[in-house]
Image (tube, rainbow, N blue to C red; front, side, top):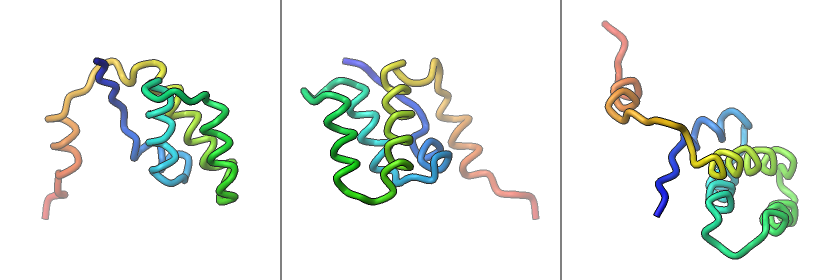
Length: 88
């Protein structure tokens, strides 16, 4: 089994897309389902909603998953930054 990790929320924000497009890209890029990349892109297109934006986010996430995510991940650092509060 693989553990593929990258910041999907940041990718969605970067592309101003919905998180589901990014999650779908990660699923497709991981290769765990028997569908081609073109089938996923066609599904996004069939929605008719923000197609180019969501396809771009899907493609970026697909590429990240194909690359197996980021090389390292330090949850303590990420968590500390996420919950840090500015001084009063």
